[in-house]
Length: 441
Image 1 (cartoon, rainbow, N blue to C red):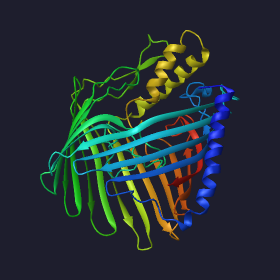
Image 2: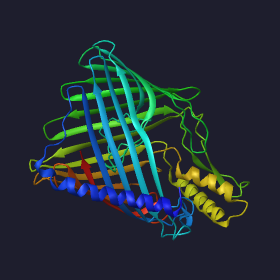
Image 3: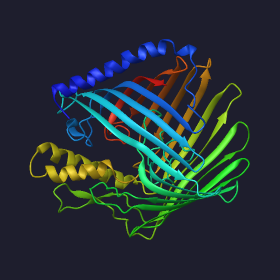
Image 4: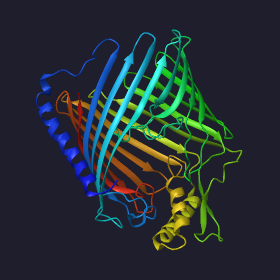
């Protein structure tokens, strides 16, 4: 959506939200948070207003910022109302969303451009009839996130994002139906049937996913097992668990295993003008591929929580495959910028290198994190460092949230990538700084 009128309208909407919020938040300290309007209907409205300054990397994945067109500056307004219904015979949720985004480019080929876009959509809606005291069915559009892992939840192939890397980002729901059976307080059995088809990296249609999830709760632990199936696709078995070893120590894991993998690999080919292609060469393999995270946290008496997490990505590239990957990416970048007959093939190849079908490119990663909540009852601070053990690359992040009033929170989310341009963490954005406010009504 382009044009001066649209840009002016979006900028005016952002300004209006800020002006409206000012008188509301001035008196918010003397008001209580919104309560349920009655016993069966609840509502909460969040408004996020933030801006981001980011530095696009001039890497082979995004040559001259022409392939991904990452803006230098953005300003965003998100209106997120949540409504829930808890009647005797049925539960329901309805979460419409309004977003308005203005963007300005200062890097590479699109430098000097600006654009804006407004969108209305329903992120989640759900109807859940209560058939009996221990049997529930539901259908609609929803998101299912689980597990204690920070970097990625391998056992969840329905949703790749954990919403923990950026706690202000929101995953969009998917259309699915569920049947939940709770025979006792210990065991919960859930059948999940995706009712929409998605696309893979190259635009091919994927069959809906079906899953059976069994959760077992103990006094200090939880273990869940998930089996996945897709028509004409491989069976996958995932599991995650958590154990509260003491008041201070929590241990967890999250993993999945499959026979073969859909991941794309660089395949050298002298007959290809780019010297190779990205292909799912292990799609029919009989070898088991596993992705596992394992970690734990320790909470000190002073309140700080120290977390450590290891990730093994079994489908990740070894050293030779990584060299072939970056070489192919560089060839595709040159072909894309040439604008000649190789531009189309190069664009398809860059799409494959951008989304190879794995959470990370290599095999071994480590994360260290320290977090302290409610400093002075108003401030949360989190520092996170993620390292690729096989590459000389990392990412450092800091998240600060200040509860200015009962209804207003000020936050910043800042990330700096460490390493060369031709490394994983520097492939897209070198630096990102987000500052904003979140208001509750």
